[in-house]
Amino acid sequence: MSSKYATPADEVAAIVLTHVEADYAKRLADYERRFHEAMAKAIESMPKPLDGKNGDKGEPGADGKSFEYLGVFKDGEIYPENCMVTFGGSCWCAKRETGDKPGTSDAWVLAVKKGRDGKDTVRL
Image (tube, rainbow, N blue to C red; front, side, top):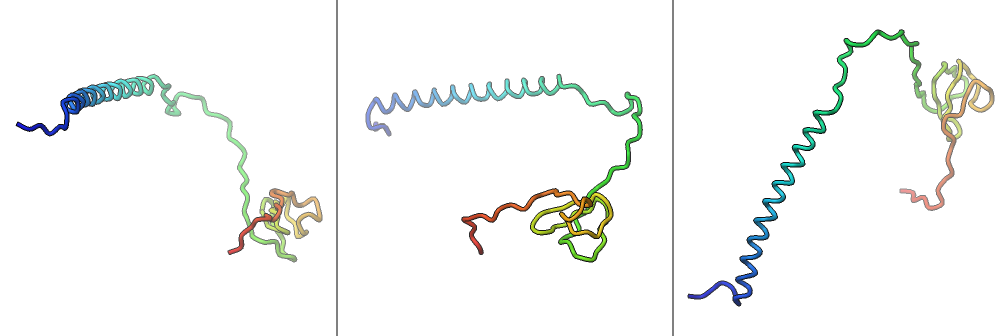
């Protein structure tokens, strides 16, 4: 009767490997089970969010203001408060209604300053 192993040592190694793999699989399954139990316990112990019915009502807040980007600044246009425009490579926000060029009056505030051109820029 011939063996599929070249030497008796190869056969012993295969048997040992089979037992090691089985033990590893058993330990891994046990670790996964304990991990999931610990996670479930941790999640269960987290505070539950209130449904909103338990607390007192707060004071009404002020109406929020939002910004609207209106594109590149155009000379001669009137821009509303809180609009944003691009001018000279920078982004500006109007503090009040204005027709002034950004940077020439206090009607504009600089929001994002133009950056430097990169020395290693690759043009496509």
